[in-house]
Length: 214
Image (tube, rainbow, N blue to C red):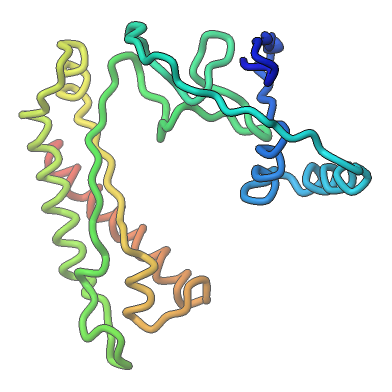
């Protein structure tokens, strides 16, 4: 890295891949993002309060060349040659929803809840549960049909999805739907609605899945 004096200097990262944020970047990081845990933020504020001055960078780095250096997989984090890490006691991975076996594949899709609100923003606003359940059932069959035309590039991937026929269905637009139904987000009635929304999707999907299995 440039040392601000026309030369360069090396930084040797520790074994735990410590991220170092300094100078103006540290101030911006704490102002815009900060730490997840309160005690760390308090510790930093106490340290910064006793500082009389901060070193400022006086140089700018210029791009000399952009060259192709090959191609490789890049992950959010890599620990011990595995793409998982323990954060605050929770084992998590790189943008994965759940662990899948080797070559595992899963189809994903979402149902837009706002499409089922009738007479929105009025005192008579209501949610069409019957049509919602029917859409979930049709959507379940549709995702199962997509298995047949999955287009996955590797034979093992195709074998996995055709044999286990995984799909993941969710919903979107919950906050907007609650507003259209004149519910306050986080209120008791909104929590009951959210719970029923998830329950109805699960039950309708399971029933259709059983029919497909038979």
